[in-house]
Length: 111
Image (spheres, rainbow, N blue to C red):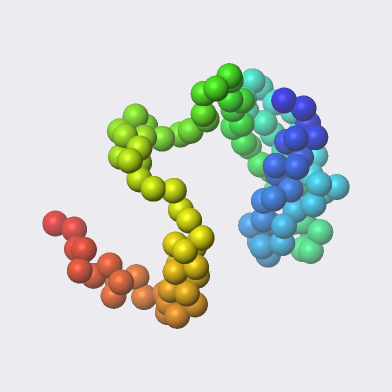
């Protein structure tokens, strides 16, 4: 995998200190060992330096890349895709959501 792709992928990451998104110009690929990549990123906002270790796998042929287990794949096989109406409903819900997950999930208590 070429370094340019790695830099683009890493430039969507946020600084752990201030939340600023890294820019491609401030991301340097230090090296890799097979699928493990070592990347340095410097935040343009707070100048924090980050060392990122990322495992990036290539998809081959028609297979899809996923970290789901076979059981998880089966669980989601018969579900419908997310559509525009669902996204709008979720957007509306989140606008009024106060962050109280205890109230939201209280009726689903675990044993």
